[in-house]
Each structure stands twice: as structure tokens, then as C-alpha cells.
Image 1 (cartoon, rainbow, N blue to C red):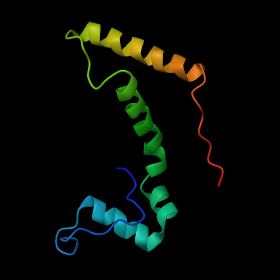
Image 2 (cartoon, rainbow, N blue to C red; image 1 turned 120 degrees about the vertical axis):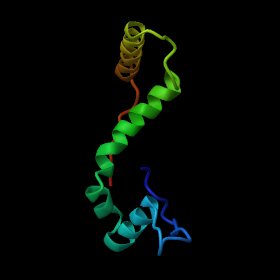
Image 3 (cartoon, one colour; image 1 turned 45 degrees about the vertical axis):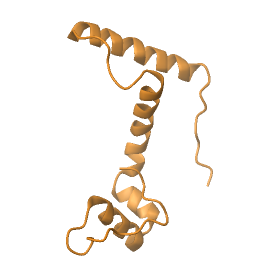
Length: 97
């Protein structure tokens, strides 16, 4: 789940039927954003979500071939393309503060 915005508000039904998002907003309000990130494993999921977003942006949303063998080849080629892009100088993000 993406991080709720800093100005996120609870849904109208948060008291009776809270959503998963409501729970996250309440946890952030109670413990703070950094503690919520640690407790919800947000920092471990975010890199994987970024990789999938990059895959969809560069390669596309779905596979084009129909047979399992052809799909396996398509995925292998796409992964090599993305790895090569990283080798050629995609920036590495580093937290500074």
C-alpha cells in the first residue's frame, strides 16, 4: 500500500467499518510515520513496487505471447533489458536525511 498523504483524513465509516487505509492513518497518527513504516514493512515493499512500476512503464502492462515457453523467454529478455538500463546509469536513490 502506498503511504497515506500527510493530510489524509479518515473515511466517514472509520468508527463502524474502518478500511485498511483508516487503520494505517490511525497508526501513523498514534505512532508517527517512521514507526508506521517500520512496523508495516513499508520500506521493504517500496523497492519492489518501484521495480514493478518501472517494468510496466518500460515493458508494458501484460505479456504478449501465449505459450508458457514463449512467455518465459519474454520475461527473461525484459529482465535483461531492465538490468542493462540500470547498468547504463539509472540513478541510485540515497536517503540523505
